[in-house]
Image (cartoon, rainbow, N blue to C red):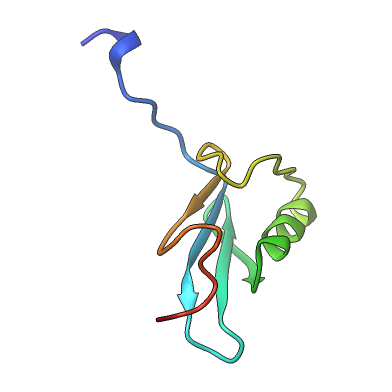
Length: 78
């Protein structure tokens, strides 16, 4: 296999975990593997990232944000 045909692998700096069943529901946000906060919306993810010094231009950029247990539109359980 040549380098050009290898699949693209990168480690996103931000990980947004699955929805936690609480009132209101939230998602845990990690930066570089460390817990940094709870998000209840996409806006919260952007604000948490900015506080960590990371600017997100595209929430769908897998090099920046890794969504676990649902994408950017998943904010409730069920």
